[in-house]
Every structure is written in structure tokens, then in C-alpha cells.
Image (spheres, rainbow, N blue to C red):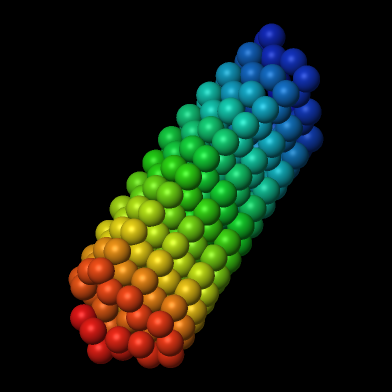
Length: 212
């Protein structure tokens, strides 16, 4: 019902579901499957949305993929984003070249670019941070503006919010780090209590565990 109802010159679009690609006028080669998918898309091209409200707010963004309920829901102008999983990149708006897989992964993204999140709540609170990689449940979950961080494992760099250029591998490594930069931690709970310390290297279980 009402799918592609406002389309004027757009071509090669495919819409299935109530109000799918509802406001499209000139956008082409878009796919919307599910209620209100790509609802506000007007000029965007090459977008794919599967799931209720997926890529709902997109207007001119191109080449975005949202699979799952509310994925990329508020994205308007961002390009080349891929979101898979319930509420993944839900508030994205303007960021580009982001990839997220998992429940609420990169949920609060607003303008960050070139981020990768894989796992439930990975990079969940990231807003404008760029070039971050969080792989594992809740990896870099609290990051907001930090950039160039790499986290592998459950709750790695969990409380990091603004720290940049950190590398963490192992369960809860650099867990409390929120502002420290240029740290490397490998092994479960390595540099666990580090908060603002910089240029540290900890290798092994609980390495430099008391360093702050």
C-alpha cells in the first residue's frame, strides 16, 4: 500500500511493504522491503533497506545498506554505510563508509566515518569518532569521539570515550581506559585499570593491571 506513491522520474526501484520508498521522486535503483523502508528517500540512489523502518530518513544518501528493524533509521545524507542487526547505526546521520553487524552496533552514530563494529553493542555510543574497529560484544561500547582505536574481544576498551590510537586484544583489555592514547594491551585484563595513561605496552594476563 502506497509504495513508491510519489515517484516521478526515478527508475529501477523495487518496493514491497506499506509506504516503502514513499517519498521517492528522482532516486533510482533502490530496494525497500518492509513497512516504511526508505520512507523519506527522495534523490538517493543504490540504497537497500530490509526491515521495518530501515533507512527510513534517508533523503539523498547513496549506496547504503540497512538490514534489520530500524537500521540506519535516521540517516539522511550519509553514503556507503552498511548496517546489519536490530537498531544498528540507528541514529546515523551524515557519517559515511561505516560497517556494523550486531544488535545495537554503532547505534548512536551521528557523523563518524570509516568505523567497523562487529558484535552486540560494539561501538554502541560512538558519535563522531573515526577509523575505529571494534570486534566483539561491547567492544569500544562507550567510545564517542575517540579515533583510530582497535579493539578485539569482549568489552575491550569498554569505557573508552575520547582516547585515540589504542590497540587492545583480549577480554576486558584496557577496560577502564577513557582518555589514554597510544596504548597497546594484549591478554585478558591487560592494562585493565588504565584511564589516562599513554604510551604503555602490556602483554599477558593482567599485565600492568594497576597502571592508571
